[in-house]
Length: 124
Image (cartoon, rainbow, N blue to C red; front, side, top):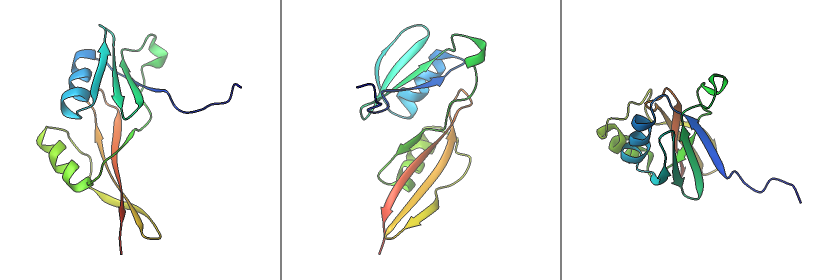
């Protein structure tokens, strides 16, 4: 009865809610569901992302790394760089399992949270 079914929402802390909302909406292109003066809710293919000002000081730390899946990591990297997203590295292979390569590249949002783009590529 009480077992976990899925992740329903992920919280990402913000220092400036307007700046963070603009980043996730305009730079990353996530769908803004609704927002208030302290929080913004986005849809990421069925997973809700809550970007908000921390309610208390003890919550004012960086979020977990979110890995956003993309079809073509090199193309996404170029597109997001053009939109002004600052990457801390370049797309690189992190694992190979059979015929599948996993590629990643990492960036910071405007609120000092690190996130990544990931892509699984069939080879051979």
